[in-house]
Amino acid sequence: MSAGASQPGEVRLGERVAILVNPTAGRGRAAHLADALEAACRGRGASVWRQATQRAGDGVRLARELPDDIARVFVLGGDGTLREVAAGVLERAQRPALGHIPLGNANVVAREMGIPLQGEAALAALLDGELRTIDILRVGEQVVLAMVGVGYDAETARAMERVRSGPLRRWYSLHGDSLYGLVGAWVLCKPAARRLQLEVDGSRLAGEFTGCIVSNLRTYAKGWAPNPAADPCDGRLDFVALRPGLLPVTVLSLLAAARSKFLPERLATHGHGQKLVLQAAKPFVWQADGDAMGKTTRLVIEVVPSALTLIVPR
Image 1 (cartoon, rainbow, N blue to C red):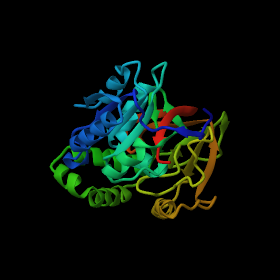
Image 2: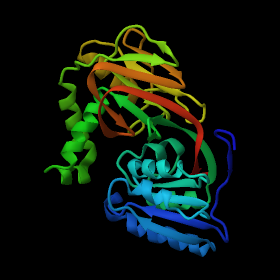
Image 3: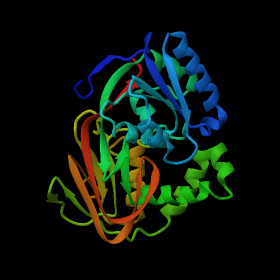
C-alpha cells in the first residue's frame, strides 16, 4: 500500500485482534473501554488477544509477543503507549495495523488522524475505519511518531517529568494543562545557553541555533503546528530551527505555532529533508513525542517512509 493510501479496515468475522491497554490511562476509564471494545469485536465474530501494560517498556514487549495471526492491534492509552507498541510492531516481519483509542493528555497522533478524542466515539470510528500508511522518524533505535524537539519544549518536557513524579502528580492528573502552563512559564525565564549546529541531508546550515523542532506530523501538542507543511505521508521530515536572540524569539515561535504560521527568516529557518543532524559542544536535552529522552551532544534524525499502518476513521 502506498504512503497515505487508504483501504477498508473494519473488524471482520474470523479475524483475530489484539487489545493492548494501559490501565492507568484515561483516569480509570481504560479498562471499561477495553471491555466495551472486546465485546464489540467478539460481537462481530473476531477473536481477541488482550493484555495490559504495567510499566514503561511493556508496550514494546507485548507488541513483540503478538501472535502471528493478529490482523490489527487496538492501543488504549496515550501517545507514549502508542509509540512503544509501534516500536515493537516495527520489529516484526508481519506488521499488523494499529488503532489508537486516545486516553492521554495531548493525543497528538489522534488529533492528526482525525480520531475522536472521546473514548466511545473513537472506538466506534475505528471498528469501521480504514487503513492508512504513514512515515515514522528514527533516532537511533528510538521510534518517533510525531516530533523530536531540542530547546524550550525539551526543557519543559524534562521539567514536567520531574513534576509528574513528585508532590504535584495529582495536580497533573486532574489539571495537566494548567501545570504545563506554569512549568512552561518557568522554563521560559531560564536563559537558553545552548548553541546547535544543523546538517540537513549532508549540507551544513549556516550559523548557530538555540532550538529545533523536527516534525513528522503537522500537529504539535493540542493542535499547534510549528511546521505547518509537515505531512506524515510525504516521505520527508520538516523542521524549524530558532536563531539566537532574546526571550521574544521563543515567545514568537510559540505564538506562530499556535496560529500554524511560519516564522520570519530572520528569526528561524524552516526546511525539510530525509536526514537531520543536530550537534553541540555541550550536552543538550531532547524530547520525542513530548517525552524527555535525556541529554546528548549529537542527534541523528531520519525519516522512514511508509513504515506504519494505522486504522483511522473513514
